[in-house]
Image (cartoon, rainbow, N blue to C red; front, side, top):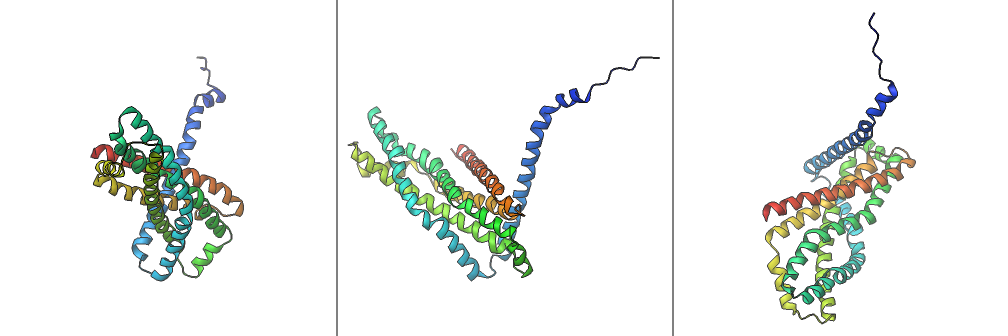
Amino acid sequence: MDPVPPQPSGRSAFEGSSWVVVLGRPLIRAARTARGLLAFALITLGVLWTRGGRAPALVGRLVRQQVVRAGVKLLPLFLFLALALGFLVIGQTVAWLSRLGAIDYLGSVMVLVMVRELGPLLTAIVVLTRVGTALVVELGTARALGEVEALEALGIDPVHYLVVPRVVGLALSVLALTVYLLLGTILSGYLWAFLQDVPLTPGEYFRQLAASLRWLDFVVLALKTAGFGTVLAVVTCYHGLARPLRLDDVAPATVRAMGQALVGCVLWDALFLVVYLVGA
């Protein structure tokens, strides 16, 4: 009788595939989350398209509330950020470029650093930390206490009543706050440069900025910032409404939403980086 070949033990087989388990489980969870977020975003878009004209007075009032909450109330903070960025980015850049004799490149640096990248992304991060957390908590608490089911029992679509106004409000708020931040940074940057006796007239400063801007910058800025607001609203509303079934689930859902919203904004920003590279 031929000898039976030795069989690999279960431990060695598990150890050989441990790297598959370690890498596979997070990928599967990420794929499931991405699928859920995509489905939720498509549902929201469908409700906005089919029921956007229903109850315009109520929905309009809810949108204005979100704009005040995520936009108007954050204006003092963004005024401070504009002054700080004007000093840290523009003022210092102008000072160093003047020392190197390359002051003619100021407009290009300003557009590349602030208009295309830092300004919109910083605005989205600030809105996420100040407003996104509150959205997850309030919607998660409403879901855990049964308020969402009560709306459905009354014949009210929770997506139309709770999600659509937040998506529209955050998209408008991030767009407006980004414009305010950029304008404040441009003005405060020249102020800091003037205080450092940099030989640059206001006319030359704004001429360089205008020469460095293209029509594509304005289009991409509008699309990018509105997209940031939409991503923040969709992710926070998804984790607030789709996940928490108990009050204990609200805090973990908030943590997940913050991380995934940040990743979503970075991916959205990377998409427009490709647009710039193609359109260059």
